[in-house]
Each structure stands twice: as structure tokens, then as C-alpha cells.
Length: 100
Image (cartoon, rainbow, N blue to C red; front, side, top):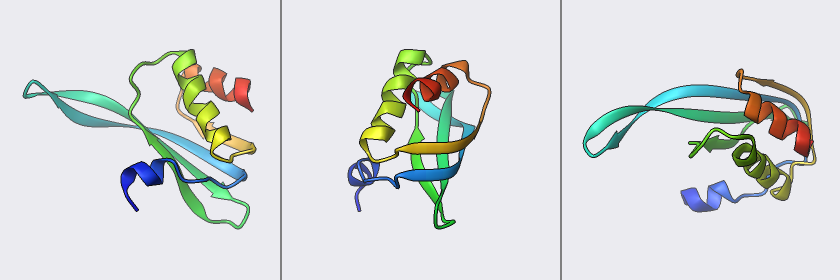
């Protein structure tokens, strides 16, 4: 499966527990390495399997940006996130409350 196909795959309809982790990675811009935030969304489905929901390299950190990301999860099949443990990001928190 190619990366583009993986990012568009259908997701489970319910995740009992969802974890949002924030990691730092280096990205080169004009040959200069810069730190970039990466958000990893992992979920525990009803069968008890851990699954990667998505890996996001945000273009901006606004509520409207994260709303579009979280809305895309709903389009891809997630109907309910029962419990969400996440980093302290007010924009992601607002977006999840708005969609779910």
C-alpha cells in the first residue's frame, strides 16, 4: 500500500481510547535543519487492537486547521472517540469537541 492510499484508508467506526502524541523531527529548509512538530494519532479499537489513525505534520496551529483534520477522520469512518488522551494543544482540543 502506498502512503497516499494509506492516508485515505477507511478507519474503524469507534475507538475506545485515542492517544495523540507530539514528537519533534528535523526538516531541511534550504539546507538548514529546523525542528518540526509531528502529531501521531493512535487508537484502540473495539477488538482491542492498536491502530495508527494518522500522522500529521501541521502546516499551521489554528483551530480551523485542526477542525479540517479531525473532520476528515469523521469522513474516513470514525463515528466516536470515547476517550482521548492528548498533548496540551488548545486547538486540537477545540476541534475534537466541535466534531465529536
